[in-house]
Image (cartoon, rainbow, N blue to C red):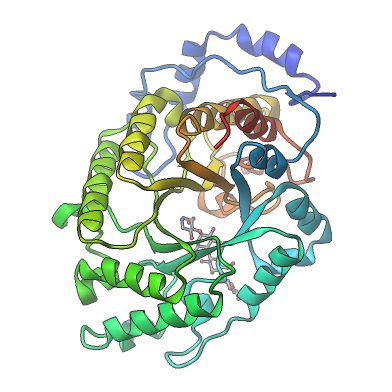
Length: 396
Ligand code: G3I
């Protein structure tokens, strides 16, 4: 059975394909930009047109996780523990995903009600759900400049911060040792815009308390607590075709080289892949080259939080879905061409629950459509795009 991305695809493509892609990119660039560091003006300078629309028909209706597994890949999604009460949604998660990652439950502000206590209830519930459905589980995130508990700022000092960090990591990672596929040990630690040394995010409380050494401390504490987990440096906004992203990719590579030279137990780079409407459609070659350089340093790569914003796309759903799907396909085809890319996770599974609704709402207030399933949990062209990218990639 051929799985058409949408029944009107042929009509749609006839109509849409009649619009030369340059008009499409002009249309889109006229819509302005979306991601961090991508102003509307910058977006309108996106000269390379969105590539031609793909035929996203796939054979059969096998799930994303089974299509990924057939190539030695993992597909998964982020979710929140309270969403499991939505039976339809939890069934969809189990049907499509081979891995789950908690959107919030393993962050400091969820785990640490007080400086001396931990609350693992919601993380335990999510892990139990994943294991009961034979899904892998990844941890997110041990060190981040956001999602810190209210007591942190008044409690952490340069004198106690190392002990605080070490005990948090050994307690949390130790609790789940042997049950976690990979941990985002540090998250979003490079931001050249702050002009810090080596592009480090100098606004991070961890940097301010401990200096750069917090990174090595975190990785070594995680490795000691769970020698079997893949230890990941997770980063955002690496995808753009922009001077800011060029600088960020360079700083990330330099940091990885430095950590490897110091013997830091870093095993993978997580590329979050929160994409804007056309950003990556303009130059996936830069991203492919970046991933080659990362894997040449001995690291694996995971696409950890993928979604494609549609806030500046036209209101018409078929148009939006096809452009979003096109970007999913272009991006994944490029990154999956490197066999060291081992997993793809979307930041949510369905438009029913996406952070984009509040973080990047549309000006016309229409519901956003960034994920593989629509709010009714039906497969969209974006689902086809991911499925086709898995079907077309080589086996690991
Ligand atoms: O759990 C509390 C709830 O008890 C309370 O009633 C409610 C009141 O607002 O807040 C709930 O916590 C929220 C939490 O999500 C769980 O739903 C926080 O306010 C909210 O800030 C938090 O937002 C998450 C954000 O990270 C900050 O942790 C988003 O859902 C999540 O999508 C977002 O994910 C980040 C990744 O971790 C890192 N990469 C970027 C990505 C998007 O920002």
